[in-house]
Image 1 (cartoon, rainbow, N blue to C red):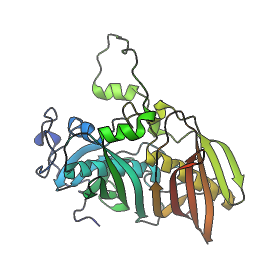
Image 2 (cartoon, rainbow, N blue to C red):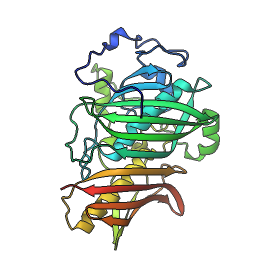
Image 3 (cartoon, rainbow, N blue to C red):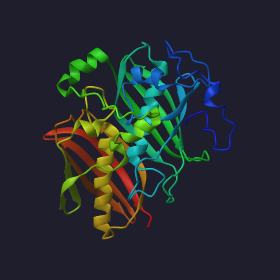
Length: 337
């Protein structure tokens, strides 16, 4: 799918110090030379997400609209028998795709990259253990219209073996357009300054002190089984659940919504199989996201099994706020143990 394979864990990779100095903010991201390291200061003002939602390491330019990065696994895949769960894989790859898209943006400056669709394919059918080392992510993006972009991404094991491919579509909004469309989501999240304890800490230590809501599954409740369907609710959504997505406008990331839908689907698979310990591997994935869930709203996640062939179960999932559909997901899971 992509023309360049990610480097293996044993490849010779230049140290970060040999690339662009981290304190030097680039005025533009267009036409950067290969092996340019993109810092937070380069990316944050352009892609409009922050840590802890953003967790990429060493984002590096590989060519026109093409970047490579290291990706952590922060959440237990639970029923998904892979190195990383689908929701978290989508989170990291969608962010990486927005970084690649920013390289190709016809206009520099602040833009919001809203994932509106995705098509994924799991490349390895066998069960695998959760990854304990950083994974490799690769993304190549292009603008498909004045306000739309698509990124083709690839996720690989630490040794460079590819195992998941995802194509992500974005609606690209300027800051002004985003504010016009999502102004009702604005929340003033300013707080009193952190109390001075007289302790000197590095930025990494401060980061560890902050809670990362993306390191654990969503706290779903009100589980309701009904034959070959299952639903659960989340909420009201808090601003704390949306940290880093987006500043002053806390909305649930599409990838996190997708993670809620896959969790309901895998829980339903276990229930229908009568095996609460069962694990499964995803096959084809199709996502459509038309809108966003805001802080203060309650989200309902539902899954229906629409096909069953041996160990393979195909689900149609939906996330909604009241009558408004936020996102839809079609996924096939195959039970492997």
